[in-house]
Image (cartoon, rainbow, N blue to C red; front, side):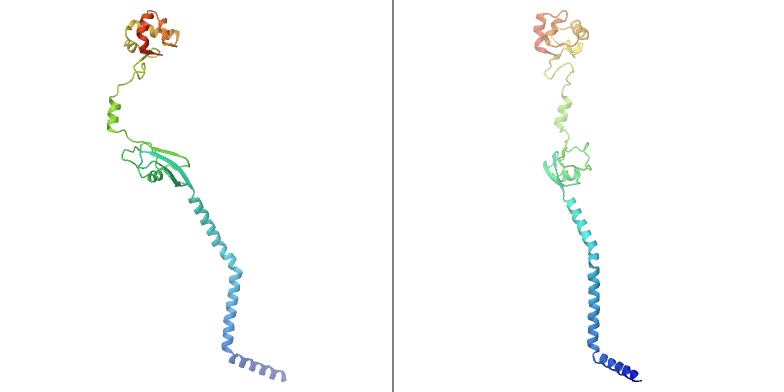
Length: 213
């Protein structure tokens, strides 16, 4: 009975203490909750930040790769032929734009503008021939395989018709020259022409300034 009385008395005093200090107890409860929450953040914070750090590191690596540069020499039919500094992974079109774009006479027939560039690469954009150049090339006389640019006759390769353009060489002599090189081999010097039957010193003197081997 005594113990029950003491227990009830103690219980009654506890209730009175709670009623009298309810406000402070609420504050203590809030503080306790905050402390527990803080401990939880501290305990698991390292793991939660790890993915963020990994993402930042990955982004930095990507940025580093994308900022690698190459140097390309671009010329020809572009506005500003230049040594262009471009990001790695650039294409021919990027080099063209860096050089100010194409000129009006640019010929892209053989150019692949989608081609990837390499460091130190040379890119040359050809141009169409102008109208005057095209007319000049079309009207230029064809050079025979038996003559050189100066019109001299090559006695090793000229055909009978070309050989007959030489002063004093007719069809018969032209055929002798052809027969000689077919049987004896090519002429090693223009003087070897005197080995052909019918061509002596006098004939050779008339021909020497107009022939080559």
